[in-house]
Length: 531
Image (cartoon, rainbow, N blue to C red; front, side):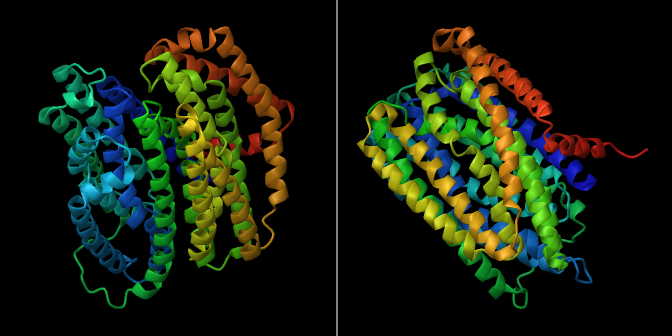
């Protein structure tokens, strides 16, 4: 367990710094281009490389690379030959996909923002030509990072994004110095303005991948171009990756529907892509820090147990991972719910806009606890080389999310984006229930009752803790108070509220004698190096 504890703390610390600098990046971006029509255009363009990369590689890398490299490590060369073949194949695919993406930029922008005006679409397209080359560098970063994870080298993959954030902050700050920032209308953008924003975003991704490559030696593998792909198990990898590709594809098709609905709200002058994107950024912050830091080392360990035939260990690891994640995810959900307006003010330009964004954030928060549990459940299937079952329950989730997004078109424009966010959360709740039932059939007794008892304890503590935080928000003036008066004060107010929620939450869990607290403390104690 000491290895899990050290890895979790290392990943958690890196993710925390990365996400905090990412939040600062978003704050500077809002200061530079606002959160309205121009910001929506940039958001659509900058999301395109993420979307394409997710379709062609993210799920495949997560589902396939770690378990396969763990198995290949038993070879006489420690898996070096397999890794070289895999890396060469991945690089070729990434180059082809990036080239096709750039050529199809006009079609992609039109698909994700059909309700944009002609000027807004033209601005988004100009940004897209700058941003789409990121696909290749995202892929290289993930290939190297997942290989490091498979070798139990967890730190660099988590810390490298900090470089991207620093470069982007500098670039967006340069934009403010040169062009004054604010909220420039779509018609005011010049080629120089577009270049500074677009080049800053892409340069950060390039350097993020470059920094991670510096740590390749820690894999212990000698990397060289190897186009002899016959005999590396491409048929098996293809079968695993095929289901994952379909899974990510249906997810992105649902995201396409959601983006189209967001664009209708943006066209009506109401919260659209930029507000939804920033609300999702706040929502995903605790998930990234908590689920990734705790769940990633467990995933590697699960893969090792399955590869070695120690399958009786799997339910224990799954349960420990879920309980550890939910212990912290629940308090995060309570804190964000109480501090929704101040937290949203950090990414908006006015108090009224912060209130609108807080409603969108509330819709996303309904799914925070379920998605934290899903992280472990889904990756357990991957440890068994089963990518077909995750496709099935993700297909259901995507269908529900897309259907509810279309239903949100019937809502008034000012709450339409929040309706889409709530629909996304409802779909995740259905997904995690279905995934857990299917995993129980695969693995056997998962001791789900222990999960639910632990979750019940956490919720009993979280409700009064969240109420205390909301009371503090009201005492500080509520939506008309100082916590919503500026971006900086919004951050300060959110931290104060979150601190109150955390103190009350953990005090109540201590009073309830929650066993998960002693386990968490034990993990942290084992992190300290032995003398």
